[in-house]
Image (cartoon, rainbow, N blue to C red; front, side):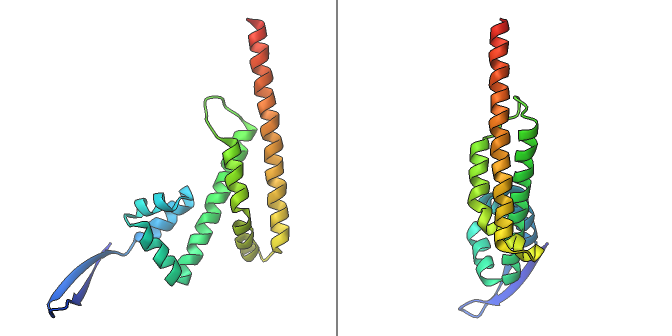
Length: 157
């Protein structure tokens, strides 16, 4: 939806500025899917500086922003777990990089989850650490299985 904003210029003449009033919704939805500010701004049809300014000035928008990033974090966790449980060789995933991203955002997510769940922040951090450790163990086990499968395939030839 486009909204028209009429203002008086320096010379006193009336000017019309058109604004996209749905960009916030589009931005937050894209941010939840991508966890990427630039991609979310592109999807909303805005410059990312507008989004950062809105986050600074609008507490409600800032809260939606954090919640969207938490959703994106959850999606990455589920994607990574799915990959580690079923490491399809045709599907590419940089597991080490995904683990770094998860570890890098864990404190911010822990704070938000603690607020949402009304839990102690340290309890949330501990649960995230345990999940990341489990992912690393699965990744190592899957890498070993793939390596063993490659060796046995080479031995049969």
